[in-house]
Image (cartoon, rainbow over the protein chains, first blue to last red):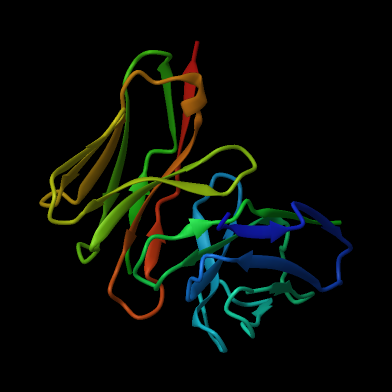
Length: 112
Length: 112
């Protein structure tokens, strides 16, 4: 079955620690994205990647980092520089950046 | 930049029709999309409409696009309790970079 997976579903970390969220897709999509969702708000774009070994900042990239070493994988690191990291994080992929996006199930990160 | 607005809440009775509205400022989107998000889950693409169409029907779903007023709506006929979710409208753009813009989402509550 083709799809996009995120792990873990729930993640707890202490303040000041970096944490990496996983996103994997086997849809053979070139483009991948990370969004953040806060209660009562829409999705805000953190980073996106159009192709392997390339990525661009979105609206709220500060305090986050990504890598795209493989087509299938686009991990997001939430660093200690992110002032308010507790949120629901959604990963998505698409054939190209103008195409419909397919979403993973999300990771809920809670920083204690 | 693009602004996409939606009313945040809608309540309907089971069996009634629901109409979820969306307005946008940028008319360069090629496609406009409706996504559904159930609690604690990722976004699921429900339907989409090409920008040169006025209407698209897909089983219980009807999408209406008024390009002059930059208004998009999603009508759900015979609304069921399983339709309770957050609905996002989104548009894509040709701009290099942030190609997808999401509205804040409308929380639909279906009352028995």
